[in-house]
Length: 323
Ligand code: 2P0
Image (cartoon, rainbow, N blue to C red):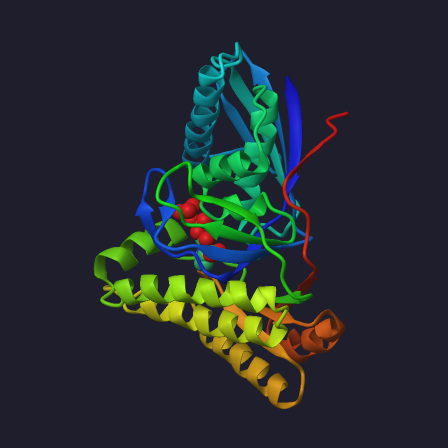
């Protein structure tokens, strides 16, 4: 069998930072995101009798990436065995292409594992619901659970493999403008940074508590289609995530001076009547949320700080023709 799937990165408005279970990737709190309409990953999975093989952007992947892919394929094979499918022992040749500039700071692990989950489930003959695909993608990378979903996703933290998954949530119309201030790879991976935060940040419990409350507030703001409230919640929550991370020992600092300049510029835009709000993930790049009509104005205001990309809400992971 050969199957292929496409998935896009997502940007969280309520952030995921910290695991209750490292192996199952159960988060300490839920999160909420927008799936982007650019920078897709397309992944083809072909069953083979040879060893597993993983090719990324035309090059055979290194041992670490290959090991993570094989571990993920083992989960798919276990599901195939449980379903009594004769594909359960098959190996896979995985060929993946990222459309985004590789180091644009857009979570390629989210689009990568969402595309791999969708293509591999199909290639191995599994018939998974969107919920079960989200659960499967989660096992590769937590944020990948959200890239299964169209447009806006809420990832329910849950307390077990069965109850931790993402599903669609309605949200006000919005666009995103990303400012890539530095395309270099980050120094501390999200995975390692989360562990360090849990182990050494004195604010970790407060972060967990506030993220749960924040997600409840975000759900209400989304239901009310209240763009202003969604933006305010998003910006405050981003600062709180960086605060709990900054308080680790030794300190981890993802934001750079130029990142702060972008946050200041966004505040200045608001004073000028452009409603924009900023967020940032585990790196120095900043993503701005605005009303779709303001996208070009926002992009022009921050162009001097880095490379600009603009996004609308995009599609969830889906199968594509292999022909
Ligand atoms: C998020 N991030 O909600 C947060 C905000 C980064 C900062 O999800 O260990 O790559 O594979 O589950 O999914 C990055 O975490 O981590 C992330 P793993 P993942 O988008």
